Length: 206
Ligand SMILES: C[S@@+](CC[C@H](N)C(=O)[O-])C[C@H]1O[C@@H](n2cnc3c(N)ncnc32)[C@H](O)[C@@H]1O
Image (cartoon, rainbow, N blue to C red):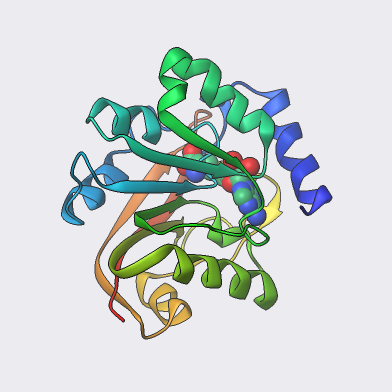
């Protein structure tokens, strides 16, 4: 694990409650909408990459899904989510790992990432991420990837990011992934700052 990255993110979750973090959402409405378009059902297997303390998992449990995984390099983030979920935590497979170093052992139907891929500013990290994405999805699998949009901030949590349009993200993912649809969204941080995101839904074809 990249210790510097881990220290950064553990510190972030140590210092602030999840509801005070810039990316906090009570209801991840666009993620849920795109997951529905991807054909979300009770038996859909979902992995939330860099899920942190996100409430997406609560909503998926609430919809009756039972094959759910959350990966994050910060144990503090996963602990915050576990504390919130209480006994429902047993319904989730928690993976403490850096996505660029992780060794997946199975496939999933749906890969979700909100505000993680955009931190990968060097080509080697992006390639490592994309090889995990490729290994985790079989043909017909879906990926929702949300990043800051071209008119979004240049940093997130004090770290530089790469901003994407749906088209530039599609180009980065390569020809095996078809961009099915996208949404632009203005997120307001708990402090009231607007941040422009794009959410893209992809299907893996071959
Ligand atoms: C901006 S937060 C977004 C959290 C969550 N996806 C959400 O939308 O609420 C980024 C998250 O990605 C995690 N993260 C950052 N880099 C990562 C990496 N290389 N591998 C795994 N997780 C990472 C952080 O610990 C943090 O929880």
